[in-house]
Image 1 (cartoon, helix red, strand yellow):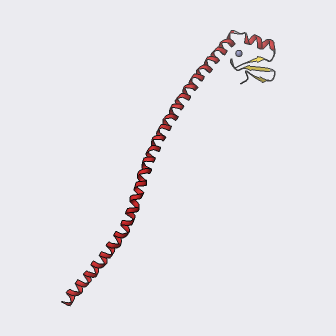
Image 2 (tube, protein in one colour):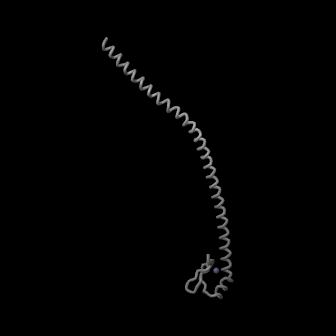
Length: 128
Ligand SMILES: [Zn+2]
């Protein structure tokens, strides 16, 4: 950041936000001025405070990131656990998938037989 903004033969002191004639004498006179020195000091203090705030924010961000990473790790561990259990689940699912395939077929067969039996019984009743 440049301390001075040059414009039409004048300079603006960024500390005091005031215009100075663009010549060494005027600049030196301004920089030796009590008001300018105070403004420089205030500006430096402000920058220092901002620097502290920034570093605090960075720490807060680091804490937040660490918390996010911890949460991510926990969910990752849970995923691993879920993955392993689902792996077991998939094994039981393959067993289950074999059973339901045979069971509905049997049930269907039973239903068919029972319906046939029913028809037969009905037919028998009809005959009797
Ligand atoms: Zn100044």
